[in-house]
Image (spheres, one colour):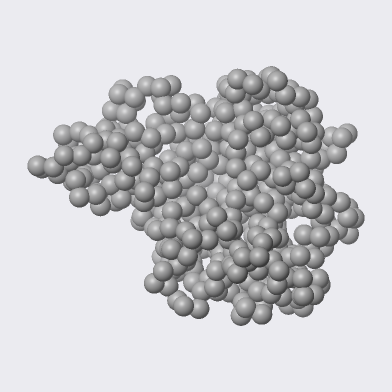
Length: 512
């Protein structure tokens, strides 16, 4: 049970076919498989050994898929890094996971090089672009064998290290094994396989493969023999054009994408009749938006729930069973869920508590953080930190988040990260960050700051400061300079009060 097996099974079951379409060019499964084997041999020549880690930071493209497969074939673990991250954020990940090699693209090469400063001199950075650049590995692949290296890969070997934002201000690397990821993709494919269409399965790869959801949906697509149209970034017009041109039947998206497609003024100009099903994940999808989307595009919307520590899918809506509005569906095959109180006691149906998860998909823990790991994984159960209820039929309803995490456009944002960054500005004395509901993005980020005495700073300057230091999707949409921050009896910032302020002072509709 390992991820390398997915490619072998795909070719044996479906034969040679165009598995990827990118910028009008088709890439067959056998071509990708052979090229990834050549990459595996090249990485071994570069000193990558079983158990090492290799960072991949690229937008969606065939090279990402090939890179992931090649890394796994040489027994190493993939470390997917969002290409939107700033150099400082990439630097932390590189320092923490200590990769042997980084694979990227020419446009990102300078940023990755900057991120690698002051790190080990043995770190090697290459691109996979088809160019004559001295940084490209592509021309070195053709001399290598097209057969995968003969390396024994165990199901408990680490396959991926997925970094997720942490409440301590630094990202945490979630250690996922081959068994975690393979079993989760296999279980998800059993539900997705029900969505059979007469014209054949043509998926649209919009979700970043560096995101946990996108990573697993890529594996699901291979298991089902899908043809996949890849887009390097989300653009509603490009999505509509792809659906019309390639007769796309399904896609996995985050709620912000649903909103953008539904409200696009030119949506009716495209032929989207082939679009049969859409899977929503990473954040809560408003029920009204789901209904409107289904009615407008004539497709079914299936919502699920997951987190990186669960590889990542926990529940999904089964179209062959009862669909309950507001529910994220039923646990995938082989996964068990429960709701517990603060003492870990199981709660009866329809009572709200913390959702816990058990199954072969539960991660080993966090890299280099044994204490953090012990807090969330206890006796084989993953404590999600999400508040939920489970009804008598086993349907899961996510009620709220135990932590202060904000999910904007499907991406996790932790307020403390932003608070610490803002307080690093010489003009800021205090900062408090909260999320407010947003129809288009799920939530938007609002920051309240108190200036230091005797200094002048504008809200626009502080927003620009954030943009220069972290990815824009993590930055506050609005910043409010105030005279004080509300505190509770023990001196902590009262986030509930801040949320009340935000709801009163900011019209959510005006943020979109």
